[in-house]
Amino acid sequence: MSDGLTAPAARPELLAAPPSGGARSAWLVVPLQAVLVVAGFTAAGLAGGRLWYKLWDVPTGVVADGQWYTNEAGLRDDFQGVAWYVTIAFLAGLVLGMLAAWLCSRAELVTLAAVIVGSVLAAYVMYRVGTHLSPGDPHELARTAQDGDKLKGALRVPSWPPRGAFPFGALLGLTLVYSVSIGRAPTEPTATDGFTPASPYAPPPPRS
Image (cartoon, rainbow, N blue to C red):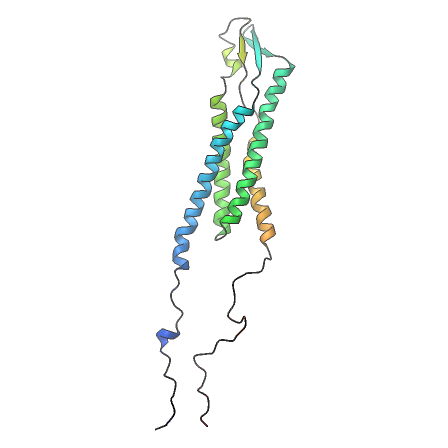
């Protein structure tokens, strides 16, 4: 029987790593972040549609022989509506894409999918809100109007490429943040910073 104290045998349950709730919480946090990203883009599309209509100068024209005619200023205002749509949608998508990439860093693929879905939905909502607030299509109204009647133009984006400004800006913002974040060193302390942890299986020191 030795007169020294020996270290008690380490129990397997003590040597096992403690259960971590990180994996369990990720199943709740990641979907919640994706829902918030889509909701944020949708709200931005709603606000963007209202802003689009507010900044647009409504063109006017005259009805003649069932057709709606506008002058050069009206054509310029019509083009201005497309320009405002592209500007607002691109900037909003760029900012939201950067925020989504910066704040939702747990799962990049889920964030990417949420940004794509949210930006497409935002583009649709923005277009629908803006066109809903604008007057009706003057070309359709001119068919039943009398000659000399003045009609206002309609807010529209006639071609598909400008409607992709929202998703394009969002993906660009996401890419910019991800490209800057590549190679960034982790800030969490490691187990070897300043000391070396003792192994639970190390033999006891020799007795003198």
